[in-house]
Image (tube, rainbow, N blue to C red):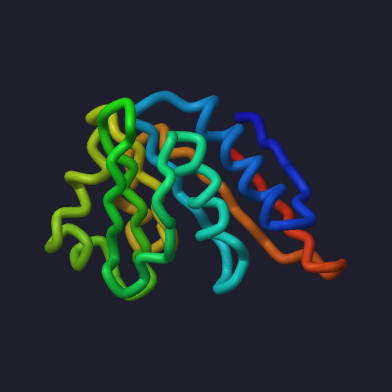
Length: 142
């Protein structure tokens, strides 16, 4: 398994790196996005969405749990925020498994540790963490 680390010094750099990740992964990819509150997960999601051609505002779905964005070339980008979900049983109750199915759509999951036991094989795991200098972020992909 290869681990790739990237240092981001701004929201724009985080969005650009997310766009590179989006371009490198096929339709049907599930991305598990780990990080503390305020780490930059939603900024990453915004950059990922932009790379898929989505131009509408991308915001954190903390209260709605899921935001669905149609991709201009067809298919969907699903942005899930499971912060308010207790565990995989709770997530299955609202049909999270349908969003995680490899059906040609992209699913990006914030707080994936809540459903670690049901993440599909091949899920791309990305961790964003604060660095002590100037608000920089370390983004680890494995």
